[in-house]
Length: 104
Image (cartoon, rainbow, N blue to C red; front, side):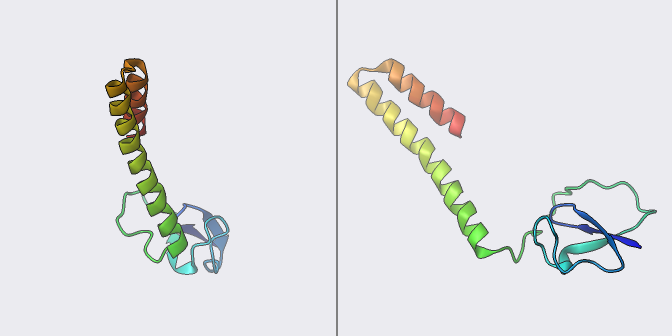
């Protein structure tokens, strides 16, 4: 029996051929590589660019929305800190500044 490793999540499958899809991340069979027993030790994540090509557009849209939301929160907290300072509430301003720095 051969071993196949999913290049997306690292799942190892044993069989004669790669499965139709990964049971953990649902990646197609084309994302599986045969694992050689005599191969040198490798890391699970090799920081390869373009590994997630062909990803479901819904996942990409969700990631972009989350990123934009997190970035806009920092600006919102800084704006609230400026207003708090302007209105004479330095403690509240410091709180919102700290929240902005922790979000960034």
